[in-house]
Length: 404
Image (cartoon, rainbow, N blue to C red):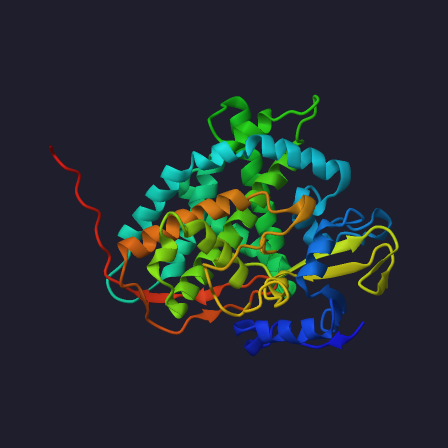
């Protein structure tokens, strides 16, 4: 296995990781990323194979799990009950129960509300240059998820704060301060959701938390701890990925000068897929090996961890010959941005719907939207999102309703 070195916090890598991915793919399907001491899959074939492999998963084999550090007890109390970190029967049970509540129909019903929320955000854009991330990319997804769950809009800022603190645990810059903040946020977040679940048990409503409470399969239910972990996962994962995708997508559209035709109803779905492929919000996702095996000429034993470079797979020239070009008209090939296999992103339909609504509305209401400053990516790896997105525009106000 050929080695390669690249600090994930190096400023040049943070701003443009794609040259590193090119170098890694040139060395083989799987290479050793020495900075992580981790084998990583680099090509589309390798990443797709590993994500779909039935003898690999997200859960550390039980006999190899390290003890939970005392200072991260609250964080792991949530993590250990999350379906994202479980496999086998537990994962199937949790995912099935959640899917029964988190249906395509319930998501599609959110379309008018997403449009209204986006319209309100755009209508509140200030005059002069402003940062699009807090004005739209952050505010919209957290309110969408909160409303889907039934959590009041007034909690949005607090949910965002807890989410950001917890998600920082997966970033390469993680340190003692981040760990302490994440554990405190996890404890507060869990206490809030627990209280809200208790409220919904007494007073059911038309929301996802009530549906999750009622979800059943063969007499089984989500435990309260699993329900809390699921709500937090949906808030954290659903919000974090969509924020980065909205920001990265607007940056890509503005930097490439894509024709506005790509945002029309007949083409927006393909455009969103290309935006996800071209600059995805998550770049590294991992799996554990459950049985000894050989993959792409390399031997692995039980408990070995393998990273999947999702963004590298999306730039594989064997699949997309001009992979570094943003082209919404290209023939569609399923990209790896939202995962694959049994852990495919459960919120993918909602993320796609938000993008398909928000992007056309933004550029219709703000046809002269332009960068006011060169956008810079934040030091967030394994995630990939902007630190700020300074723009300027003249916002077209919606026409007043006719009195006739």
